Structures are given as C-alpha cells and as structure tokens.
Amino acid sequence: MSKLGQLSLLFSGLTLAAFGITRFFIREWYPFYWVLAGLIIFFLVAAVFVDRTFYRDFFSMKTTKNGMNMGVMILLVFVLLLAINFIGSRNVKTFDFSQAQRNSLSEQSLKIIKSLDQELKVRFFYHQKQEGTEETRKAFREMIRKYQDHTDKINLEFIEVNERPDLAEAYGVKQGKGIVFLEYKGKKQSIEKVDEQDITQALVRVMSDKTKKIYFTEGHSEYSLSDAQNPKGLGRLKTILESKNYEVKTVALAQTGKVPDDADVLALIGPMQGFLEHEIKALTDYVNRGGNLIIALEQKNNSGLDKWVASYGLQTENNYLISVANSPLPKGITFAYQYSATSEVTKMFEKNQISLFLLPQAIKKTATPPATITYDELVKVGPAVALESLSATKASAEGTFTSVFYAKGKMASDAKNDFQMILYGDADIFNNELIDANMNKDLVANSFSQMAKDENQISISPKELTKTELDPSQTRQALFYFGIIIPLPLIMLISSIVIWFRRRHA
Image (cartoon, rainbow, N blue to C red):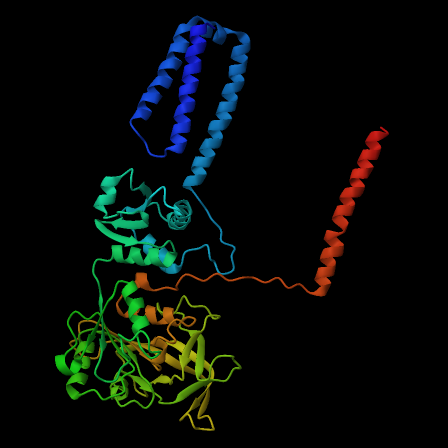
C-alpha cells in the first residue's frame, strides 16, 4: 500500500472521528456537517483509487475469498437477527402480571383507541438543554407504547423546538416544557401530563364531534354546583364532568318554564323544596321528547319529585339504610358491592369494589309499573337494615336493598325517542366529600356518560398502584432456610472440592 493511500485512509478516519465527536457534543444539525461527510467520502475513494491494484490482488487471493465466505456467513446471521428484531418490534405482545394491572390500559382507553379510523399524530415538544427532559421523554414514550400496542394508527414524534421552530410556532410552543399535542382530523388538543387519565381525556376531546351539555336544576335548595369547598357542594363533580369534555350549566325551570333544547342530560341533585306545577310540566315534556335525567333524592324532601318519579314506575321508600357488617367507616356510611352485570354503567365493576353512600334510601318498582318501560337495578346495598327514622330502635326490614335504579322507555304514545332515567336514593354520593371515595367517581361519571350516550366515556379510572406483602409462616421460613439457603452453598462447595481433588490426582 502506497504512502498516499495510507495518508488518504488516515485523513478519512480522522475526519470521521471529528464528525462523530462534534455530533455527540452538538446535538443539532448544522450545514458544515455536510462538508465533513464529503471529506470522509473523498479521502476514502482516493485511498481505494490510488491503491486499486493492491486491493484487486488482495481480493483475488484464496485466503481472502475463504475469509470473505466466512464474513458473508456472519453477515447473513447478523441480517437474520436484524430481521427477527424488526418483526418482533412490529408485533409486540406484552403481559401484565401486576396485581392491579398497573401496566395495562383501562377499558375506557381501549375503547377509544379501537375507534380510531384515521392517523392520530402525537407530537411531543421539548427543549434539549432543559433539566429532566430525557426522563420525561422516556416516561411518555413508555406510556404511548401501551396505546400503540393496540393500534397502528398512532404516530409519535419528538420535536426539539430549536430544530423545528416552524412547528413550534404553528403549535404556539415557546419554551418546550414537554408539551404534548394530539392531532386528529384537523383538531388539536394539548396535554401536559404523561399519565393515562390525561391522555385518554385528551383523546376523547380531540375525537369528539360536539361538546355535550349537562344542565343542573337550581332554585330548590339543590347542592351547589359552584361550591368546591363545602363538603356538600358539587364543585368536584363539575370538574370531573368538564374534564370529560362536557359543558356544565345550570337552569332555573321556574324562570325558563322548559328544559333547554340543547340539554343532553338534566341533573336534579338533592332538591329539598317544592317544584312548581309548570316546572313539573317542563320535566314531563322533557321526558316525552326522549330526555335523559339523573335524579338524586334525599329522604323526607319536599320537592314533590317522589310522586312524579312514581308515575314512571319507581318508588322511593323514605327510609334509612345502614350496613350491618362491622366496618371502620364513619357512622352513617353505607357500602354497596352488588352491581348490575348488564348495564353499561356497572358491568365492568367487580364484586370486591365498593361504593359508599351516606344513609341512602331504598328504591323499588311500584306495584303496577308502566309496561312500556324497562328497569335495571344498578346498585344494591346490603346486608343492611332499614330504619323508618334515625331515632328508631327497631329495623323495619333487613337484607339487600336497591339504592340506584335505571329506567328506559316511552310514556307518551306520540313519543319518538326513549327517555332514560337514573334514580339515586342518595344525593351525598355526588358531593365533594364522597365522590372520590372508592368506586363513587366511576359510578357517577358512568351514569352521566350513559345518559349522554357517550359509550367511550364509560369505564373504570386507571387503577392505583398496590403492593403485595409476603408474610410466610414460621414453617415455610424454616423450609426456605434449611431447604434452599443452607444446602445449596454446601452442595456447590462440596462439588467444587470433589472436582478439584479428582483433577489434581487424575
């Protein structure tokens, strides 16, 4: 090999090293990189051209050919491994062995991503020099991968704001603090957290064709929708509904005389004062045009709604249900763990998941319910006792009682659409104090989703992390120590000594 050829190879190698080092420390791409790449190729081609005779003779040697055959075999194995890895990356199958299925998506998330019919673009904007960026990117990539395991329509893209200032400007990103945008059918939705709840809620919003409206009645001493501090307020409920892309409003039927035409759901939560005649008529008209209602009634209220709901085949018992099982729960808290297996609201609940009520009342069907209406007992309380009053010393009944009822059908002969109604025997499950307890939030949120006819919104919230404790008995501990911990090292030691002794005297 000539000196000129050696120098050309040396310069090509040095230029390649300079390119690699510079690219490692300066992450962004600059135009002068093309100059380095051109020099690498130029010196390499020059070295081959100058010593072309040497290389021709070298590759025609028998030893070279044999070596190349071995090289080709190694290359084929390498290509095969690459192909296996490529196919495996495109057909990922994961298994979740955690007790709470922490590494799996909730039913709601699975429903939504399976309904994608076009590409969903997920763009993660970041700033390379910002502290914690790499950890955030890794966590987000792992979370999105759970979604990508179930569909090929999710395209994830990481965008450094300095490398793509045009995209950053188009999305209104200035600082790049790990801001994520979902884009679907021309609609954009931003999120700033990497947990499943926020991603799925953003998916619902970006995929939704319209924002459905939920109206809460006021003027009858109902629980306040704007009160986020009082335990009896509904501020937390409002936040939950708005996070699910619902528009939450109030309506005073005494003033309007009718339920708004754009009401997808009407909620009457804990009214204590009487509804006027024209208000009752407005409710009846809303039902006849296929309305959807959620009603929660406390005992001994003066709203007059107990009589009105009885006309639809549901009767409130005006009693107080108290759990008879020993429980550390505060006084008056009654739990339920029996759910309808057929309703979309509760069919995904498990028997070991409980809902908490505060002295609910029982609900049952009237003696002669309308034949045009179908019913479903959504939630049952029990074992419990029923008291006629809180001062009663003797129970009027004992056993299992229904505290949440569902009704659907037509009352008016000229009605075009079925109405839906969910009647709760307790209004406290909706308030700030109890809505986040156990399964309450899922039960309430699913009720509104069922009424709004949003099947994608119905499911259980992502499960929290749980721990599994290992508490073996003394017998099992003894077996573990004397059966594994002590014998195994002794066996290895004795085997080593025997082998050493036999080899030494072989």
